[in-house]
Length: 162
Image (spheres, rainbow, N blue to C red):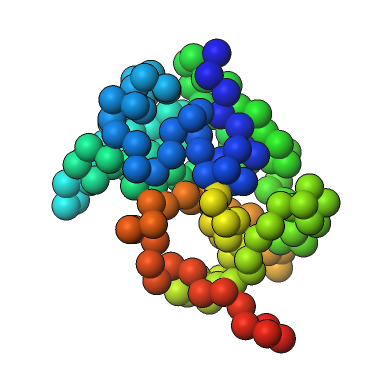
């Protein structure tokens, strides 16, 4: 059974042993065939394993992505190790910061290009948080691990006093 560890995705930037920069052969060897393949514009192809997505540019993975944080599904021969996810609601910003701090996981706080709060884990993922307009809760909504050649301009670290 292949494990999709949410902690490994966030902290180490890998999903079942696959990292951005790996080729299709490596992905097939480590994860097996995807449950779905979708073509996207500009030569991009998306492979889905449940609701985990791998984005390819030609033969190489450039992003590992997940945005169904309260519905963790890996499908078939894979299982999910939820870590701090898997509850009825996604953790909020303060809960994630507290957990990362308690586990001594280094992170950088910042914003995406739309001003939403993000946490970037060096060597790991970017975590996006969005405020629910109805409840006012700022919940964790997305995990992305990008190849360095594809990640420019998406994250601005907070400055002193931010």
